[in-house]
Image (cartoon, rainbow over all chains, first blue to last red; front, side):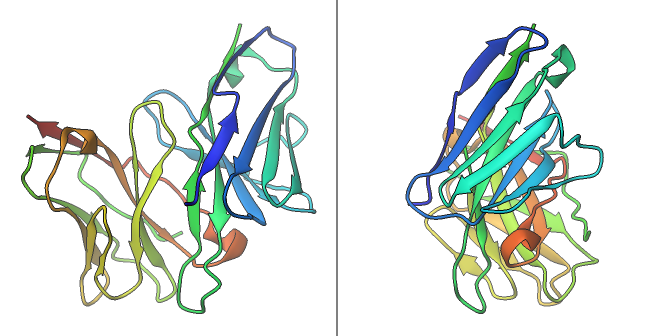
Length: 120
Length: 112
């Protein structure tokens, strides 16, 4: 259980175009999803927290108008990179938060396989 | 945010146990200890988490010090597929507060 998918797994686009990445929780509902970015040989950096039915919360330094997040259902969040430029080339990873429902159990993030974005 | 400290790397032999240490001296009472691992070009994979007591699952065991200032992830028999970057992360327990801050992690190499 607790499977998260991302689509596409790899995308190459021209500078100035927009790219949409989908993140789906396949076997559980997720009120909260997270979007991360990872540059080569670096660790994951949280970009934003996506909440179903409300606006996303962006981390400091992340442009909300450039990275549009829509969490339209309990199983789908999308990240749109608008007017992409070569410096946006990166590995984008989402996670979905599985809620235990128990008072003494932590909620757990399950991650997607990632999307490799290359902007030419 | 409470921080963790891990060695940069560790080597192990296949089929031998591996103990991956993590220090978190500033851990607060509400912080859970999470372990994830990441293989090259893949998203992180959940390994295990705990609060105070030692935890076991099919992948690994988590031994937590009594004062909670350190913990150890134990892989009982390392395989080549266990070679990955392992992240020890502190996080709150619920909802949007569950966001995780990834450090550099420890790179585990497994020798055949």
